[in-house]
Length: 104
Length: 104
Length: 104
Length: 104
Image 1 (cartoon, each protein chain N blue to C red):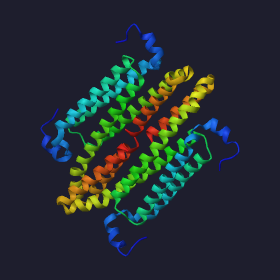
Image 2: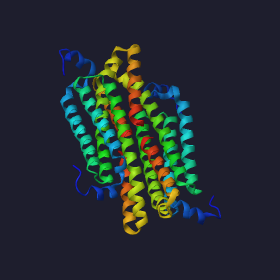
Image 3: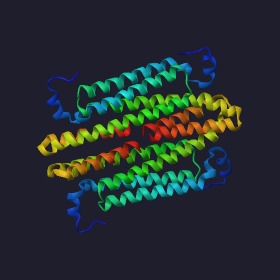
Image 4: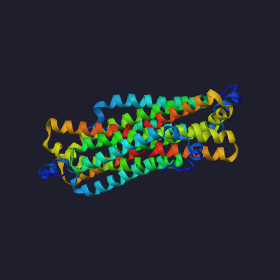
């Protein structure tokens, strides 16, 4: 799916250095979601399903916190250096994303 | 995957009345997880990925709260009526699951 | 503030056996809130204030999970035994409280 | 409690422009904590206490998200402009605070 403008994307989106690691973690997350579906289909014990949902939620939060860290390190730092309205806008965007994550 | 003891399972695990609805919701959740993976692979904007992660987290929590409600309605109520140690054990199990969910 | 119907309240609300422990934990929570206020007033370092807020949030969640456990053990079990609409209503109430807590 | 070095503190800690607003919000939070303590002392209905705890948790999270936004806007932007190790360190600190908040 990567395209010829990967390099540009890289400089914009920053998390590319760890892309493989993120993709592996997300593949595991997909597997966890599939496993929960299977547990419901096989009518496993409710409490065991809830344990798996809590584990998936933690795994998702860990990915989100990692992405935020990368975003701050790259986008926000770049924007801060460029200064002006873009810096303000990037910070607002990041803060809104943090708020959604904390409250979701 | 359902087996001949479905009926027994049903009476134990309680959420079967809504099984199809849970499976549909979990299928959507799997799709959301796959979508997030694809966004990372295509190097989409970090903030947009975080928005999808928050949405997936909310969807998961909604499923968990639904399963807990079903669990209380069936297992816990049945155990409470049966009384004795099993009631205590079921409540403890449910409380521990709530704690994991709230803190995860 | 306790009134003459304390005994009746006791039998209804169940958490009274641990009341002193809850009051002590809540007194600590009040102290934590006051401490955070003082840190802002004294313009302490933002990250240190955030650490205290996370600690307070965890302490609150622990109290909530304890109250829910007590509530299930007493009110919900009693209602389950009494049966009928009251049992359904109590479970719905508890599930709604869990949902608010998980999503807040 | 403000001291003669307020100006220096200001330039370091950034949230001072809204200090009165934060102090008011934190005073309300203290009042909410005191109210919950009183509800337990008066043996109010468990579910009503849990509703107040969820409200307090949301109020705390809103303050935390506000402080993080201010922190990013001031400390992190300043450090990004200064560059070097301090920028990296400030970002790491902020990410760790976000992780604690999301997971608490």
